[in-house]
Length: 365
Image (cartoon, rainbow, N blue to C red; front, side):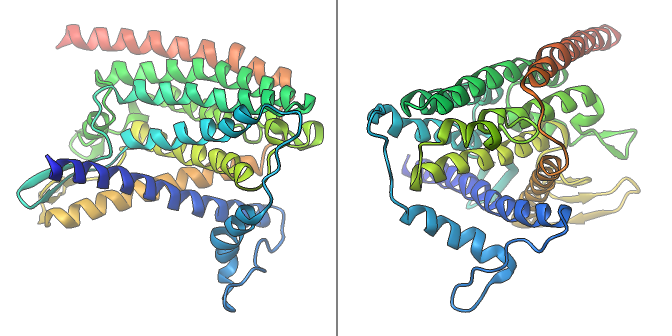
């Protein structure tokens, strides 16, 4: 039906809009947080019509205009088709993943119950892993197509790193699936609305603390940022796999990094910190443990849920930025050792313990 198609399109566009706005704030946070850590002022010079906005104008307006107006240069000996495809292959899968991330419960509108999730997919976690694996192709194609030995080395590093940490990430997600017995991200978020002992929100971090640590570390490594930025380390490879990119294509690779940061924050929020859940908030309003109830309209409840989700995502985006400007870069052998000898055994142990506990809980019931 046309109405259903319009609603589905609107939900996907809203999810992308929310992700891109948080990404823009993330770029601003990165500049200001790094400035605070390094005891300097940070971005504050660019102004539009006399308004500088403490760096917001520079980050959200001036920088994109600068990149879009730069000349798009393609090396003479490069593979032009693959050189063009690589930025798209890097950015599009990251953006597409937001389609399955729920940003609220339901909204009652015009007699309809609208599920606040871009694409209602009952195998959402599999979709997340599939899109994450597709992002490897953008890195590999960029390094290969540039006809530059440093770019090729960056592409090889990036592909090895991303594939290595995807293993630990997938195993961490298995622990979550065992806990909630579903692959649907919306159902996982709803399951975290229960209360333990009548007052404590049953968020995933209480059930899977080890999976949270593994997933967060693997997610930061997947986004290829310090301390895991070996594929684009400027001291060795200039800019790694996207050295030979300029203008809008270079901007797409930069956007991919920041979109992945926001995506990791959104998934951590959804899987381990209740997603859109607000403690004691149900579909009809607040129900507090001491017996007090406050009725709220459906629209107000939805707004509170979307706001809670956005604030949690912003908090974890901020955390990743602080980690970047606090820790030094690993050596490549340290990076691979952490993935294969550190996170992999820990995630395997977490899967076995989770499966055992679920089995014992099932027998007890």
